[in-house]
Image 1 (tube, rainbow, N blue to C red):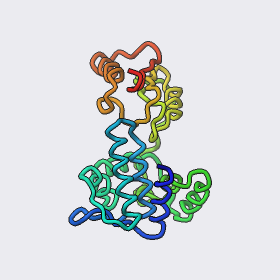
Image 2: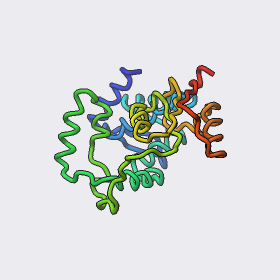
Image 3: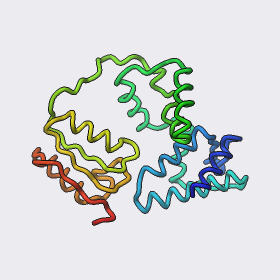
Image 4: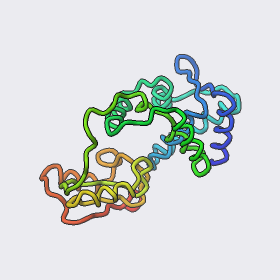
Length: 226
């Protein structure tokens, strides 16, 4: 699998890959392929892994110069990546760009990308590259300072590829009185109501219905351990 990913990245660095047939025809290059990979490793369910395998098979055929067909699921990943037409991404940008001003000098991002390539050659340039916040207006409010406790339930997976578990533990430390519900051995970002973990859903439902927090930190097993 890793060798196949490497061949795809190498091919897209030379020329964009043509995927699919009209009307669902797309061209993606080495700046976009890492996002497809990130989507694939962001969920460890059987269905998501099968879809990721399908994506890689299509990309591998395109890298070999063969014609390809893309499924509706792959189209749902490619269309916002190529066109930028994604309501969820737009809403997320409004939240992220409202936190603090982003650097506007392109040279700053180029230097960050260059420095990240050594340790993170695939995903480093993806996350360090210039983004929409560089062109966003300055935030209208000062950043929120977390200096006191807050009665909130924090739910985090140990293998979350988007919000690291280390970050969730850090937030837990800042918000005294906030129990941490840990999902062990799970590589997934969205958990409650999406992942199918009965332990998580039951504990969050109890908190939402009663407003009562667990008295201490708790742990839910992974799907594989149930």
